[in-house]
Image (cartoon, rainbow, N blue to C red; front, side):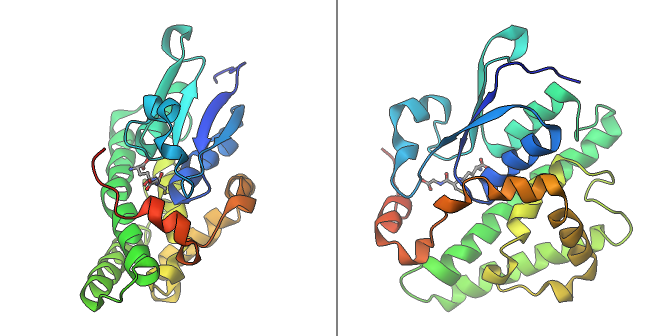
Length: 233
Ligand SMILES: N[C@@H](CCC(=O)N[C@@H](CS)C(=O)NCC(=O)O)C(=O)O
């Protein structure tokens, strides 16, 4: 059990990627303080933020009590979850076989579910023109990925067996399933998993963090200008 005296700085905005980290922090009870990064206003391009998150995406953390007792910063939500999991020993097993199970599903979320669901959101809700090919492509791909999760969950409670960082990474991307054109009734095992996780008090608290800042990007032209069409700087 880690005894953290100084709070972890969480650079955060209330989105599925941000929630992964509030979920972990709420589940473990690690002390943290939220530094909001208003991505609709372009705060992800502030030089001080780019220093810790050079990809101009949140979440990122600064742990004042990192390895050797020195501060460390981490960006990329999957890397943050693994870092915190190694640090605390919670929700990320150290046994190699169990860890490989978690890693596979964590990377599956990072490389598959998150990006594909993100594109489904984009083309279904935000794109200024309706592009049926893109809508079908990403809606179908999310449907396929939901099917993979559903099969996986048919004979185990959580993605990697025990509740882990892989589940924490995935839940926020299943929450907006309607915006991805999916019906959870088509995926009964996934639905059971979803309802189980959404009833966890730590997850309820985590999803509330900064909820008052959430905006509908589909109706926010200024945010669209900041978020869409980014090129190398
Ligand atoms: N692979 C990154 C993705 C993070 C990401 O896409 N964050 C979005 C919000 S969900 C963001 O910060 N967007 C700012 C922008 O698009 O400029 C991670 O998992 O940390």
